Amino acid sequence: GDSVTQMEGPVTLSEEAFLTINCTYTATGYPSLFWYVQYPGEGLQLLLKATKADDKGSNKGFEATYRKETTSFHLEKGSVQVSDSAVYFCALSDRGAGGGADGLTFGKGTHLIIQP
Amino acid sequence: DTAVSQTPKYLVTQMGNDKSIKCEQNLGHDTMYWYKQDSKKFLKIMFSYNNKELIINETVPNRFSPKSPDKAHLNLHINSLELGDSAVYFCASSQAPAGGSEAFFGQGTRLTVV
Image (spheres, each protein chain N blue to C red):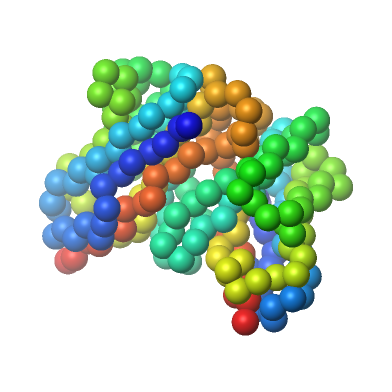
């Protein structure tokens, strides 16, 4: 079945540091890939997405590139801010999969803490 | 306007009770979902539903049942609540029933069973 693996947290960085959160996936079909962010006490918000190989998703200074050869979708940001502190989820949606519950398959989430 | 709204935001109840969580989306989406987030923040899909088909994750106990009065609503009924049901439950919707589309999430309902 489909699965998403992302680095365990918490990840603690200083403000203005460079961020990378690793994400790799396995899928039986042709997945779309997503990063969602969950701020404390809130629901999930879509941060960025990529629907095919070599696509780059970007939003709010965050970027991730769909790498089919390495089955990866790593999240990066050049200079993090305290306001980026949240839990980040990598997820996939598999167009080609049959059966089972449709929807997103999530990684376990990475708690990011940015210190001033 | 809230795209996906669910109520209540917090729900505290005793073991053995029956409770419902309501969800509404005003995005005109065809498919709605319920996800469960456990204490370690792990998210797992419970159901997906569109006008034609309900798909149930086989790990979900049959005490949980989704009810959809119309396309914009998908409520979650839980019978005979157990301590292990304590979690945050998220409703979501998307345009397409299978793959490719991002999901829009509600704010979550924190269920505590005592």
